[in-house]
Image (cartoon, rainbow, N blue to C red; front, side):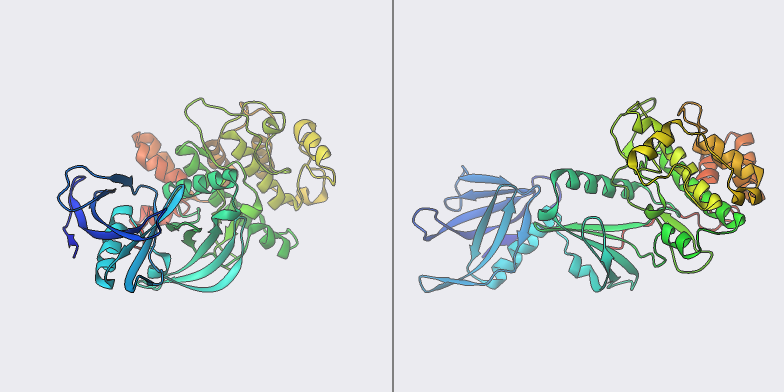
Length: 426
């Protein structure tokens, strides 16, 4: 019968006792003495031996315990499986009680969590870039959420790298205009990402449903929310690198719905003064320096931001064509045009901001902070302007960060919530 001790510290014994393993050559099941110490599983020929026969680290190991009982030589065994990076091992216990004790101890050692223990999955919401998306309910709180279900076998190593990058960014970026990350679960076959449930579809569909015609005041509201999210990212040194209406989701189906940035798989963290030349982005929204394979930095997001504002106000893209090469040529060489009749109804401040964001040289392009200070956006809310001015006068860097990275300053000024980080549901 195994003994199980509560452990505090690396060298504490979780559990020890008899476990049986099948011999590779003979095929018979043989008894050993096992000790689980921290994240290390030791096996001995028999209890009391000073020298272990084998030691396996459980770091990065998956547990599979829903395995049918087996009968060998007239004896019934209760197995579980440990899935190591390059092999699988089945271990056999003499009773269901012993199996449950070992499984419980190993779960603690590997930090095991099962999605289905915490969430009830509901109907399909659609297919994402990497897999199926389902609606789910957190069993304890009743909160609705969305779960991305990604089959690991269908991912390339590059896909897996981008997915893990997105998860790490989402863990950091708890902001009211960025989709909220709740949990992540992983087993040997799947990765499950639990996020905020957004019911309004993507921003491109929102514009398309309105024939790409929205009031300028509404465009300012949306631009402000997008801009504050970008500012928040840039303060952490993160560039999104794929800003476009399809990567912006509407919270609900209302006319005045808030927006949330999503899809951080192409994001990158830049250190001070750091640049890169990786060719990421989407044609029509990508900055000229990326197309020219020149060193670039977070300023690429400001270019994409300018394209999105142009689309909102002008009802079309500034550098568009049926031919990809022509889109690239226009992006690099063509000047912005406001010749279409629709621009006669757009304010001079709006066109000025677009010109400053769609400056070909990244060094001359305005920063996201300067864009948020521009009269076309900042003039939209005197409360925001007042808070920014006060924080700047006082030299309060914390309040400046709040003022430039949150989309509802009235809540902050009145002492309400500022959309800060929310703890895990677990």
